[in-house]
Length: 207
Image (cartoon, rainbow, N blue to C red):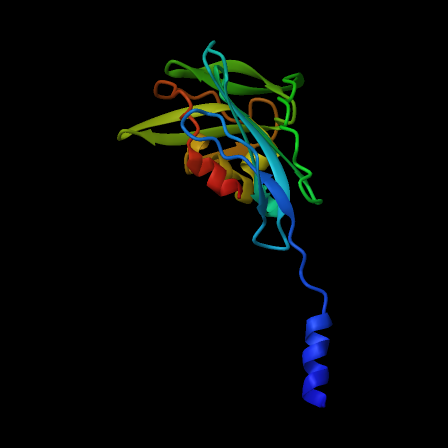
């Protein structure tokens, strides 16, 4: 009798609810179709992500995606090296199929903060930071065996230990941030490096 009571009690226990979210992971064409998907964890949230990469004066490359994600994947941040800039916004919600809309591009409004950026081999150019870019950043990257230095503005999320992993494709593994106008020093550097284009591995880091 006790055994039967135990089985019935377990059966009546509330089950861990998982969300159903729209998933849309763009392929090589850059487009995708929404498909409803059951999330794998009760900790997941539904997410819609927009990532933009600006290189020079060309039209920004835009990638939009939808997915299930952990709370740490609900990020918003940007890094700006002057002519090259990367912006990502991921908005999350916690009800079934709530990620119906794609995230719109955030407005780039100067916030009054200033950092050094590099032009050629000189890093004395003034860069006006935008939006939530409250930090100056300096990073050293390795492209094809060539060590190069970049300087500019970054948001707090990019400088945080957890957030920087999502931006590693764009800022490299050796970067440092500081607060205060022109705190990233006006030393010379090697030729500026265009930002690496987005790869699907960035989407995996956000999931």
